[in-house]
Structure formats: structure tokens, C-alpha cells
Length: 208
Image (cartoon, rainbow, N blue to C red):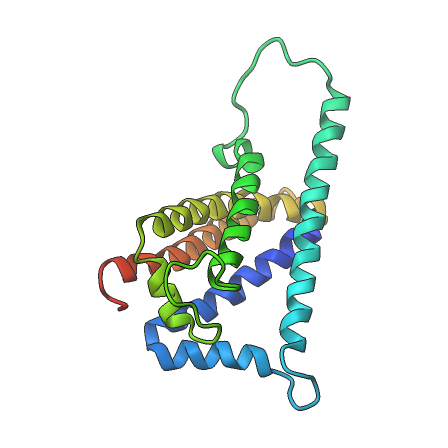
């Protein structure tokens, strides 16, 4: 779970950098979308690197989901009866990890159908014209609601997940825990704010 989570976190950072190109105009982000399809050429065929990245990301998502299910089952087997006294010892992010994961899984499916395949896209979808595609999506109330809810779930997931991954991989210690929590909070805040800034920019007319 820790390794697959860090792979997805790395993807999110790279994905955010690419998405923020929308603030530099249609040429910038459309050229970036084209580059993603021809990177590695002429040694690699068109979209080979892109598909390799997609396969790796899909494997990470599946591994993360399976790991979450297995850990949940082990937890239930280890403690088949609940505690007599319930206290909220964990943070809000910790308690919502399971639901956050479900929200993100559903969002990934919708996001792919909307901005990758164009199956549920609200406008005239063009594969290498993400600028207009993004504007189309965030010009609908439901596109904004789905995206904003998912990004809040991403922030909570990263906030707890990064710190947990560090503990699992043996990076955490009494000295480093405070620093790791600061990094986790910072990553969650920056990524959430970065992704949220895009629909907000479309809604306010900053990007049009």
C-alpha cells in the first residue's frame, strides 16, 4: 500500500504541473498534451511512453485498492468484536481514509471518461485540445461539484497517507515524525490548492 501510494503521489505532482499550464494559455497546455503522446520519438512509437505510464498507474491503483481491502479484512479478523468504549483517537483524515478511497476510485473512472476518452464530456471533445475540454467540464455545475469534492478527498488522503507510508517504509522516528507531518500537511495543502485553482479560474473567468 505504501509503495503504490507513493507512485500515485508522484503522478499527482507531475499531473498538477501539467494541468497548471492552462494558466499560460491554450498553446502551452495543448502543446504539452501533444508532447505526452510523442515523447521518446522516434525511438518509441507514438503514445508508447504514455501507455506505459498509464499501465504503471493502473497497477498502482489496483495494488492500492487490493491492499486496502486485505488490511481491512485482517483488522476485522484481529478484532471481531468492537471496543466497549469508543473514543475518537484518530484524526478526521484517518477516519475518512476508506470513504475517501471510494470517492477517489469513482472520480478516477469519471475523470477518464470525461477528459481522456470524452465519453461523458459535456462539449465537443478533442483529444489533444485539453484547454477547451477543461473549460467545457468546469462550465457545468456537476463538473465543478464532482471535481471539488474529489480534490478535498485527495487532500485528506495525502495528509494521512504520506505519513503512514513513511512509517511503513521505516522512515519515521521520534525525531522525524514532526517533520514528516509538516511535509504531509504541506503536500496535501499545495496539491489540493493547485488542483482546485483550475475550476475556480474557469468559474471566475480568469481562464476562458
